[in-house]
Length: 305
Image (cartoon, rainbow, N blue to C red; front, side, top):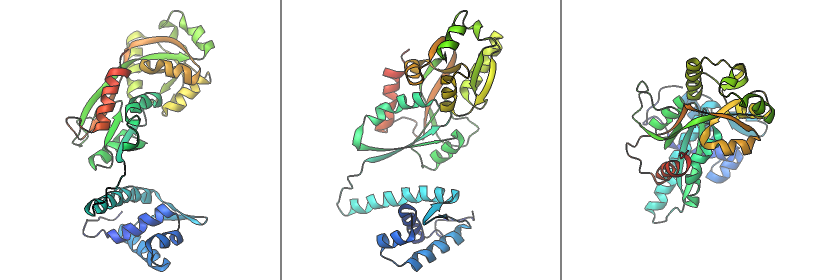
């Protein structure tokens, strides 16, 4: 993408692009904007030339966003949503829209635990419009620096090497429990945790905090499970465990949810293996009502093993 500045970025072109992206076709965008198709097509070409990138690809009768188009649309959506609220406020017309709350969720977080962390936020009801984005922590932290997300949930704190002005807020920590199908659990429950030596195991990939914690514990104890596969996606890992491919680990604080959701049994608990959960925010002191609700819920209901 070519270098840009705010003085060279034309908001009129961006508005036409945003409208076409929302409507799916130029024809529908003309009805929304009350301009002709050639006008919109011309403005889109000018915007693409200024960016040096294609923003749309045609799929049948519809226009689909390219990867760059997705990025531009995300920021354009923020710009014009806030602009609409500004105009309505200045005109004395309360927008009536719920407050947007954008949470970036690290893809290494267990989904069941993530849901439990977000429960107090979802309980706030219609006053809040939640947007949850799942991605690599590094990309989410970059979005946090640009104020594209309000908060990042992660299993690792912000590293001092990452040049983002933000603060770590520990929501809680938990030991882990080893789960497996009924047959695997019965086979490896006796003599736990030594029974894990040689046991089939589905394990997170090396770039996750849980894997690093498990590796440290295994090195200390000399236990060597049989690693059937390493899985980056936590939801897939748990599905493989449900299918009997191997034992798997998950935070003890959601053990009841894991057993019920995946119809698995407990093999044993590893309290020495810890998993931590952080809210990373540009605020040194958490003040956003949704974040405060999340923090209180985590401390009073979730992390109370």
